[in-house]
Image 1: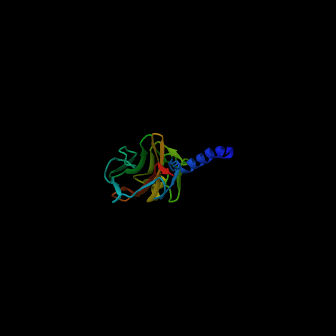
Image 2: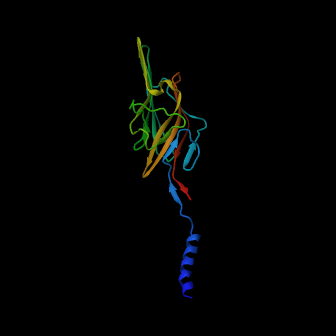
Image 3: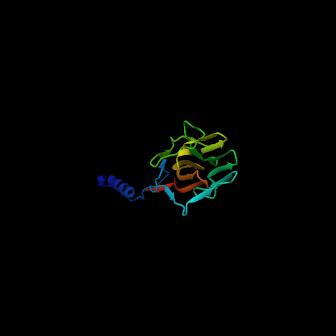
Length: 199
């Protein structure tokens, strides 16, 4: 009888632990891969049609963009096209709205780094909260110059860090630009990380 009295509470405790609901864990991915469209905690958006911003003949233009559709602007696309009869310039840049950040180029700190499909965007990326040029091109009589890694690239990915309260989300944006008139910046698609529940 003594053996049964001792073991009964142990058996009941074991049965209770086996019948408890498993604890759910809330997680947020610590990185995203440029071009990734699916997975736990990944929100993918493909605007139809593409979001296109034209700036031919405009002295300057700014476009505010809300990536995660929470009602707050996350990025500012700045575009300048200033030609005249003898000289001119045009440029495009990306500025994160504080406290968000973007991936810059380490060797060219004031320029936006063009990422390739498959590049990882995460904690160890080269983040900065300031504006970064995609390209800058100018000309005057006898001279023509251009700078920026996007100068010779028509399509690449930009890396963005969205900071909302205690949450940090990583994002890629597929960007296309045209240097031929009408000059344009085009957002083809993008994805970002969010909290998700893991059983």
